[in-house]
Image (cartoon, rainbow, N blue to C red):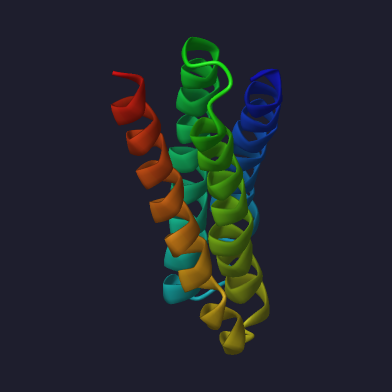
Length: 123
């Protein structure tokens, strides 16, 4: 799926840019704990961006699989909810945003599970 490659490329670009911004622009502005939170957001964004590329290649191999499509969608939702909430939390200090983060984690888990199911069903 071409869309997952495009979204993955944009997400990878943003992960690199946000990682550099965190390292150079926020280093002395955030507490050590909030810098760790920022870095966790960048790491998980990049891990799941790579997941989007896997989904794109799998979609090409197993064309028409709705499981693959939903796997990618869940990874995108996970990036937005998990990493997005951690980016905002670390820069704003609004701790209730931490309640959103687990929904992103569950979305990541669902995305990987759907990818595994798609692979299993294709065999």
